[in-house]
Amino acid sequence: MRTCDLVVIGGGSAGMAAAIAAREKGVKDILILERGEETGGILLQCIHNGFGLHTFGEELSGPSYAERFSDQVRSLGIAVETNALVLHLDTDRTLSYVSPRSGFVTLQARCVILAMGCRERPRGAIGIPGARPAGVWTAGAAQRYVNLDGFLPGRRVFILGSGDIGLIMARRMTLEGAKVLGVAELMPYSNGLSRNLKQCLEDFQIPLYLSHTVTDIQGRERVSAVTISQVDENRRPIPGSEKTFAVDTLLLSVGLLPENTLSEEAGIELHPRTRGPVVDEFLQATIPGVFACGNVLHVHDLVDFVTAEGKEAGEAAARFLDAGLPAGPHASVEAGEGISYCLPQRIHTQALPDSLTLSFRVLSPQRNVTLAVEKDGKCIKTLRRRVMLPAEMERLTLQREDLTGLQESLRLRIMDFSQNGRLEEG
Amino acid sequence: MKEKRTEELICIVCPMGCRLRAEVEQADGETPQVLSVSGNSCPRGARYAKEELTAPTRTVTGTVSIEGGLYRRLPVITSAPIPKDKIFDVMEEIHRAHACAPVQIHDIIIPNVCGLGADVLAARTMEQRSSDDESVFPAGSAGGFDHQGV
Image (cartoon, rainbow over all chains, first blue to last red; front, side):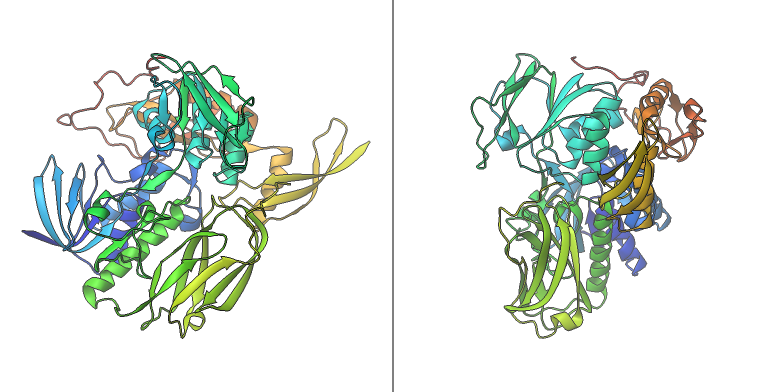
C-alpha cells in the first residue's frame, strides 16, 4: 500500500494553511486531496471583498485570498491531487479516494488533517411547508451559479435566513439585476456579521423581517409566491401575520453543518453542538494523528481564523510526526451559562501549553457582560465585553500561569446570564 | 440654522463591526460636518464614520464573462472604493466587459471605470482551460448571464 506522512483532506483555506505550516515545520511527504478542480475551496465563489484583514492587513476578495495560498502551496512543492474524492477514512488512518488521474487509490497515512469544510442545510432540514416547485435553492448554490457558472437563478427573489451567505447573495442578486424583496430571519436578531447587514441590505434598502419565517411556498413548475409569518417567542407562526411576496426564487441561508461523514466512518467522536470532531489543544481528534481545522471543526465566520486554525493543525501534525505529542490525562473544557460551545474541548494536564486560545460563541446577543473562566470550579479570570453576538466567533487566550494546576475542568461562562438579556439595538 | 445630532452606525471597514457614535452638525441643505466619533477601536473607524456621513464609498466586486477559462466568469474588483451612488453605473460597465483567458491577477479589465479614477481589476489568475479538459459548459456559451427557467 502507498504510504504518506501527511494527507490533508480538503484544499480550501484550512487545508492549504495546514499543509503550508506542516511543510514549513519540515514535513516533506504531504498530499492534499481536493474534491474540486483547483484549490481554494468555497473562497473561489466568494467574490466579495473583506477577506484577509487579520492575515495580510489588507482587504482581499475571496479568490485573491485563495490565490495567495494556492501560490504558496505550489512554490513549496506540496503535492495536490484535484478532482480527488475521498471515499473512506479508517481508524488506522488508511484512506481510499478516487480521481480521474489515479483511479481508485488506497493510502496509509501516518497523519491526517481533516479540512473538508461544511455544507449548507437544505430545505428538507428545516421543513418548510408548501409546494415543491423549482426555484428553491440554498444561497451558496445560487452563489456558485452566479459567480462561477454565469447563471442568474431568478429575477424576483426572497431570502430565508440572515446568515452571511444570505446577506451577501441579497446584494449580489441585486447587483446582477434581480429584485430582492426581503430577507426573513426566524430569530429576533440577525445571524450575519453587522458589516454585511449594513452594506448588503441597508445600502440597497432591502427589508429585513426579524422573527419571521417562510410558512408557504406556492407554484407548480416554478415558485410563484412565498408567504412569510411572524413568529412568537417560541418561534411558532402567529396566525394573521402572513405577508405574501410574488417571487420566482427562494434562497435559503439557514445554517451550515460541518461535513463529517468521513470522520464518523473513522469512528472519530463528534461534539453535539459544533458537529465537528472533539479536539484537544493540538486540534487532535479522538484518534491520535488525526487533526481537524476550519469549517469541518466548527463553522467560522472569518477566513482569517480558519487560516490561523489550519496553521495550528499543520504545526501540530509536524510535531506529531517528529517528536510526538503529549498524551496522558486531560481536563475537559466546558461551555457554561450563555456559551454555545468552546474549543478545544480537552486539554492534556501533564504538559500544559505556554498559552491556549479558546474559540467560542455566545448563545444569544449580549451587551456589557462579564465573561468568567473557572478552573476546577474556581474563578481565575474575568473579562468585560461590550458586545458579543452569536454570529461572531470570539477568541480568548489563557497563559500558562492561568492553567497551572489544572486537573478536571476549565469552564467558560457569562456571569449573571439571562436568556432574556438580549441586545437592544440602539 | 445649524442642527446638531448623534448618528449611530456600524463600522464596515473590517469584520469587527464596531458600533460607532458620531456627533454631527448640519446646516440646512449642506453636507453634514462630523464633530467627533466614539466607539471605534482603530483610527480607520473614525475615518469611516466621517466618510460614510459625508461622502460614502464602496469597493465593488462582480464578474465578467471570460472565454477559454476554467469557469465561465472571472471575478473582478475595483482598484479603489468608488462613490456609493455610482455602484450601479459601475456594474453596468462590468456587465458589458469581456475577458479572454489567460488572465493574471490585477490585470486591468476596465481602465478608469465611469471616469471615476479607479480601474476594474481581475481578482484572480485564470489559466486557459487546456483543450483536453472537458468543459462543464459547451464552448461558445460564455456570453452574458443565462436566465434559466425564468
